[in-house]
Image (cartoon, rainbow, N blue to C red; front, side, top):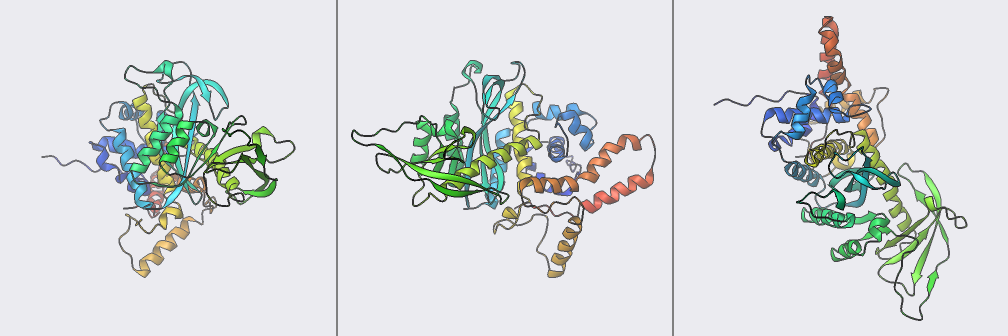
Length: 441
């Protein structure tokens, strides 16, 4: 009986993270491609095409990565289940903010499944493209992916498909996440969902708190004799993730009398009320919330921007695939790479349930040595001391530089023998292996 060989090593923290998913892949070659894609997705590439990733990670045949996505026998549902179990292990019972939103990407033609002329929210207009509904979380300023599902326009349905609206897709995502044991502090969504009675009713059945946008023409039934009232404007400072502030104003809109659902009007200027910076929101948050609800909903704006920007950094829209089952695999691997970056935040490192797989229980001397090594990395002139997701990605990109440059220089070193350069790159890569990435048990 032959013993399967060990997978080829890449960069230590990437290998350690990907090892958590080893059982998802039936063959070592598939697992190597999974790990290589994680390395390539976090690399600093303008486009995360498979040929570009192959060159960056030292794979001679880019077609093998395509084969991994289209023909390799692994299931996206199993990978997603494993990723969410990993995330759950560092959250236990901690509640986080859940955001629901859709992401659209322009695509030419109609060869790709579910591409159609449709409204793409992040572009603000109708374009030919593909749209997905996404659920993602935020905890102490760090975003992380939860789930996604493609929106299937009625005119592009396959025979086996059943049409679902975007709010119906969002409801299904929330149901699934609750069944898996995730806890939500509050749900945030834009007016597409705020104007969906089905979506709001589902949140109420699930006893979830929410803050959603509504349209200017939003209607509320009032009994005869009741009237629409407004409270006086109150100024407040909207606080951004960077600590910067913006002056805003808030007033409550009361339809007859206060109800469980409450309505607020939040502009930056009470006279002009510019459409691009004026919010109308609906919420079931209890208590005195006038001083807080604006900042709670404001989280959706920067989270939405940050999440989409981060996905773009990882190549969410860079696939060159036409069958959705293959696109879904690509998106799920992007979500896995996204989580790998998020886990490096102190938000997760300091979790009581999370222990580092990379280390055994350490003595005081060993812990001091580890801290000294970590401090060495922080002396790099481009090391980022910020705590945001992009700051974390920047530092991981510095750690993988020696491995990436070794792969990019390998073709030249096959032409011109420079043993000292080769040895130097190997030594530097070995030093990078001292970086302690966080992988929870």
